[in-house]
Image 1 (spheres, each protein chain N blue to C red):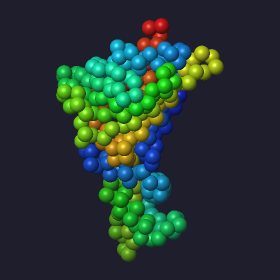
Image 2 (spheres, one colour; image 1 turned 90 degrees about the vertical axis):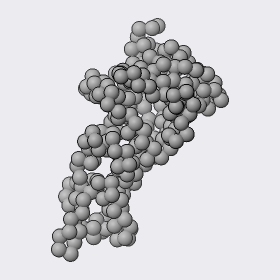
Image 3 (cartoon, rainbow over the protein chains, first blue to last red; image 1 turned 180 degrees about the horizontal axis):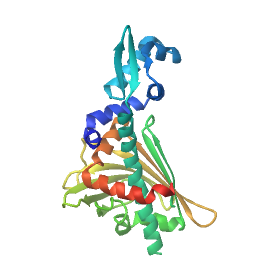
Image 4 (cartoon, chains in turn yellow, red; image 1 turned 135 degrees about the vertical axis):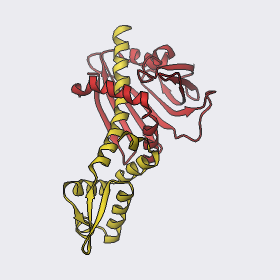
Length: 111
Length: 164
């Protein structure tokens, strides 16, 4: 996981992929249960091609995987990659929590 | 706990930190306006900051470096855009090279600091960081993931995790 976080181009792609509301919703959906691209396409007021494109962006970022089953492509979410994204965002938050706590300490010591 | 809220918004590539202090606005302001106080909290615990130049006025610049556990240095700077002491200031925070000159290859982050007086004499601080893009946000996070910083941040998380 740590190695993944150090891989800048990959985390760029993950953040880019998650910066879109439809793509976030797709990830949430396929983390719960795998869906075919056509089943996903029915959920959103947009063309099949547009949904397919969103899935491709998520797949490139490693947030979902596609598996061929018969004539369908089944899309499934990758929970580890989601955790990486969450950990990266948490690190940013921790840096600020740290600063804020230290500011509080200085204020307490140094009237 | 001094932290009230941290909101991370990938869509708009911003992060908003809201914190409450039991100290008047002027004292919280002084933590930024005084370089010796600023360097006591700006760097992570294992990467303490040293502030070199400190001109917190519009058009001014603040330069600093942080020193890691093995003596490695990471330099940064603020380009100061707006200052309304003691209520508000806006800077572009960026990376610098060893001589303190801005590294144009790295994205800058706009940070807006606001300090508001609470009814009870305390201060609410709101810091809005706006990253150049979602990708820039990821890139800066990746920079912050260097070993020492990551460990330090993990320790702090342990201390603060329960407080929310």
